[in-house]
Image 1: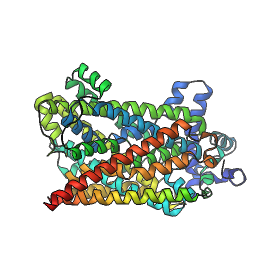
Image 2: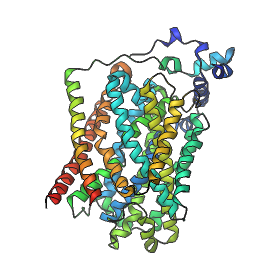
Image 3: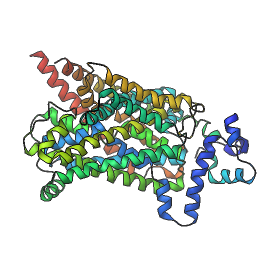
Image 4: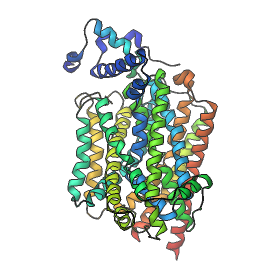
Length: 454
Length: 71
């Protein structure tokens, strides 16, 4: 296993502020483990997995699930969403393990093991998808707040202000707990789903039989399929969870707790995602066409007469929460990626803006950029929101290929390389994500090209 | 740096800090880059094939996106 020869060069004098903060967190884990308090160890190590999963239940993702429910009801897409979260677990477990074993971020590992070219290309892909996704998060917050008559500039200022506020603590653990506190409210969609009074028999039937199957346009079905995949398995999650695991200070000894953290995040996010679909299913039952109003403004309004004002208010609040948590995690993943591939600069929430200027500027800068774009008059917000998840699906295959190579790299992973079963599912997921993204791209292109010709 | 000196632990506290972190987890250790992976020809071709494939698909998606915007 390739390890840096730290023993010869790292002395007490080489300690930094970041080392001290991380060591304090690690001491708590060490003491909890020594006292045999399993619950405390799990609590202390909880974070990156839950945040990656609930952070991915963001504005466009919840809208994507709601659109699936409004368009196809609780049939095929209810079990499909559950399966995509199972796929997300497989992928995120690999990135957690890489972070715990190498103590390095995903962008950093690609840069060092594959060279600067692939490092910058991966960071470039991430920057583009993250910027577009962040725009949709600001849109979600703006739409949610519009339901309460809050003007757009104030909504955008709140979104960007949250990112600035979260970075002020100069401590990873503070940032993480703030984000987790917000993320818990993702389960508000579960309350909305209960208030929608779905039929338990219909839910059970859908989960067991994957029926009724979707009917109608192939390109709409493929768009929804690709969007739902992009709503659960995305490049930023890889960058985020690996970097956050390293920043938190996870070690190979913590891998079981890292898996539990990822599993808890998966279950919570899957429940909230399925709940968003179930909450919007009454629109399908009452034949309300949401295809012309996918920006989300229509969902709380359209649901108002069907499930009542309290549920519609909760739906709008859920959109604000989904956008807010994703603002934090996606801005963070951009900051990690940019500062990791830049090399030799600080890339931790345990560092102040003076110690890690690029990291903090990227974190706040990308959020500010997204906010500014949303406020530009005439920006096609609806089209951007629709295509954000799709873009994530299209750009996912290279990220998965790098992840699989790194997770099988015995030089850096030693005995913690992928098992054959993880490789089997990893390759299967890569193939399915590639097929789903390219199927939509080809079908939609042919339909558009054909329509333009006529 | 002044900031680091301000936080530098002293005496036994310093050794306790070393014990609670893995040696290769320290900032000074992580700052040293890992050696470059020796990629086989097959892997390099596969990486380029995936990249070109993604570029082609991206062009189709961007084209569809622009045409739909102009409708």
